[in-house]
Image (cartoon, rainbow over all chains, first blue to last red; front, side, top):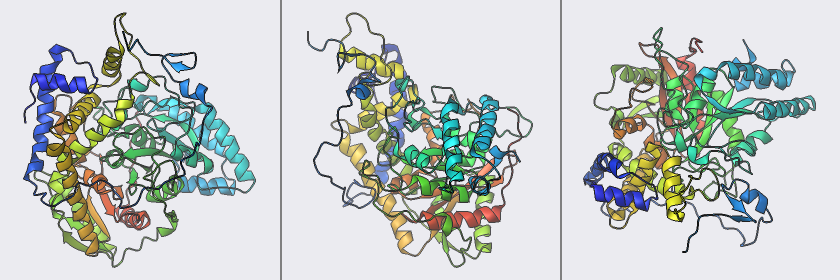
Length: 95
Length: 494
């Protein structure tokens, strides 16, 4: 399956990574190469095989649905590129 | 011998006998670390933490309380979150990030008395096989091709860890392994590295790449050291729901060196077309060593081996695209400078374009594509089915009585930095050809240095074990280590 420039643009958009128009052909070529490598998987007979979901067959542990931490607002915000008045600050979302 | 050149086992014994202090040992490592700047292995040094921890270790030793790693100076891969210390995963997207918490692995190591010298270089978000995708610039392999000054890769992604241990800048280091990132750099630098069974070591506080494949493990100067350090890292953690609630055995006690009667499988599918003669010979030598030690050699088949790399390069990017979605410039790390008219979408797109390097961007986009509507079944579900078959291949040979599997660790010795710059991305992926099956199946695997090639570079073999039987696997590795008698060290040029 070959990736065209429109598909590369769409994938970049979905991934929320800005790619300049001039770089799209090269990206499309590289993605095509990688996906071409994956085409080998079509040679395998997977009839009746369940997709693997868990590496180790085990039931995930559960815990009581209770609050285990809290009151750590300063720590939560300590690494934020922009924090104001106890909140994460981002550019305007709604016009 | 300078103290920084010691193994964990030797230093532990000297510390307990009072022949050496943790502070002196740590000072020796810090001198070596500073003299080793040319290797670009340590990217954030933590001398103040190291000395505080070393003094505390000396106090514990004086009080007669000496846990496994008491006073042992380690390097920590940059992928581990360490409280108050930059933890960037080799990426600009996490520039300036200082975690407010400690990863489970580093917390356990510190409880066991370990000393942290600093953070180690790595490929960006653990994606790479040569350390060249690092935002810090690549680490350099202490080994060279004889007198040829060409700089070689220490491998990746745990390349800084491998370079630091090999050059005796620290006694041992942590690594992580998603497709071979402990075992390939260990093999390229003549050290030992084990990837434990998936779930043996908690992933909590380790920057996630591909959650169903990632496992942390020790990178050390000997198999015994790997056993000691793995014992301190392993164990159940309620904060990682995939961590196994199993007792951690005494791995060091398993090292008897007796493998008489054990059945070692040699998988025919690992004999690749175009395999260098030196790798083939190394493998044959390893087989002879195991036979000499009394093991029985059995030819086995793992028929889906060929499909492991393509399956991996669907599954790992798919998981990465989800895991790396969190880097959006809001809660931590880098945020792009925005124009007046930019909204939140521009903030995400510019931040991620600036923060992630080209290889990480490529993998995120591959993952996004294989998970997107219309392709999910064709790529992602098919890859997960093939993964189930790869795991079944191993289950069948273990059910047939195989105790361990012996393979080469890498398809070549360390290559030159920059040599792969113009290669297709897929060419670089081939480095993982012998190691990636082990991650897909969740098995433990260990790389052990066995010999030198004609250029004078180290080569390693890999042993693969049964799930949860790291003790038995380490014992096989110990037998191989003793038979191989690998003692070569890189000639110091840095």
